[in-house]
Length: 249
Image 1 (spheres, rainbow, N blue to C red):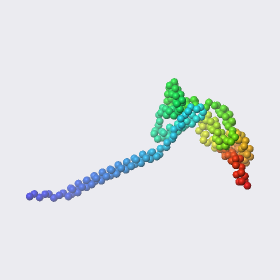
Image 2: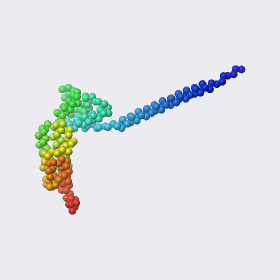
Image 3: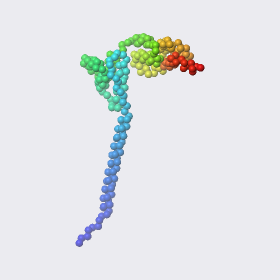
Image 4: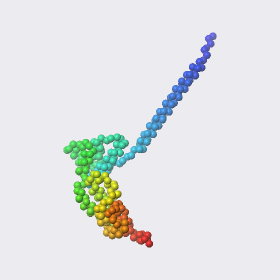
């Protein structure tokens, strides 16, 4: 009877070690894959949260005035934010996107212009056409005359009067593109000519008391915003004299 050979324990142990190493490597690969997937999901979520969405401008209705400039500026802001998220936008795509955000009458007029003169190929050319066609034709002097006529009405608040006055100043400055960029800072600067007009056109119920204020001495040296604050204070004292008399006592 033949005796079977003794088992090779060393070879079996080596085989088991190889299988264990293989399983360990598979486990490590699976953990690495899971980690990469988690990072990918996290990056996607982070990217979504970091996006800033800007609303498109309202439809342009073709009204002659300064609203077309605000409409065009709104589109440029929208394009700027869009390009940060999705990359550069084709010039023609910008034009067509803006054209679609107009009323039927304006859209028809723009389409007719392109049929007769060819399509706009750059945003700047489209913008120049819109400004030339829909911006107010008033001269600088005409706007100045309109500013002179802005006066506080009976029953109108100082705040409402200030807003109308300030709006007309903005329209005057929009004649110059370079000055238009500084409109946001105009209240930090002093324009004595504007100050004289603002005070002179205050309502008769407010102006005498306003001019008696110690703070309005040399008011032409103050900012328009400061004059608004002082006029509002006078308005409140005229509207509620009993409150100020009580405090005075």
